[in-house]
Image (cartoon, rainbow, N blue to C red):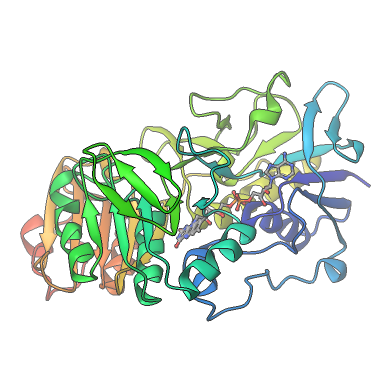
Length: 399
Ligand code: FAD
């Protein structure tokens, strides 16, 4: 039978292996992961796992029953596409089809590599190192007011820590949302008792404290760095597989990489979106769930001659921060008009982005129904009346 090798045993890798079996693939499936742990889900790491209200987040998948061979604690070191070989720390592995699903790695704060008490939050090991920081209610400094920073700050406050968030930009989520949309979120920090220091950078980390660029010394039993992530693809250098400006594998609309018999999916890959007219690099869970179905279909189709449908999702993600459920669907840079539903200083509101009279993205805070209805409207591309849309009492629906 054919041999599929999947590199990276996170959400995208596991879902690819599972989707292959669900879609009837009968060849060999080998899942190779660098981490020693049973494959696990990441979103709980900045939520229940940190607080100790959940022990673990291992995926509920019976790999043995599915005939998926899982090799843990093995690192992929390179690919030789011509020879159809994956080089790993345990030796070369031959493949007929290779799937790259190595995810992303958090950026480090320059100058803090190896400094004790400075943490990242990407892996189960990271979360386990941070648990005692919360349990002992240390003072914490969070670097970066992005999604991870906000979620960590939420958990740390819940645990009773004093929390300062240091952000180089003038507001939270500056990389993700326009100023006017993110503005109300600044208040969320204050309401939660978090000190948000915008327009501020870390000058240095000392034992027990962080010194900011304005000279302020903030006591810190721990520092958590959440300043973004980059595709974990350094190991592909020299393989001939085309990578983009952020190191992402440049996949096509069926998530094929630039060399034969190699796909790439999840946080490590970008793909061209016809829907949005640009290439998307998505670092969210739903993309690591949906993309694998396309990959599996394309691998199976390659043998049967049937091409998979193209991958052109409406991106979706959620975040739980400061007692709020924040959801986003679509891609707002494609929009040209912003319509608000509800009072942004209140507990529940939505922002819609339209292009001409069609919805291209929405951000819903505490309004999951808006999200569900809006996501369908984005998918269908139906025309909307912006005036009706602005009334939060009306359901989100086509004109
Ligand atoms: P990963 O989950 O990063 O998995 C890749 C795996 O590949 C890793 O286990 C890695 O060790 C392994 N690997 C890397 N290099 C190699 C190599 N050379 N050889 C072998 N193995 C290798 N998204 C949301 O939508 N909502 C949320 O609330 C949310 N919360 C999150 C909270 C945290 C703390 C984090 C870190 C992420 C969160 N995300 C959330 C994002 C979501 O978890 C990711 O988009 C998703 O995990 C991507 O899956 P992936 O399989 O592509 O990558």
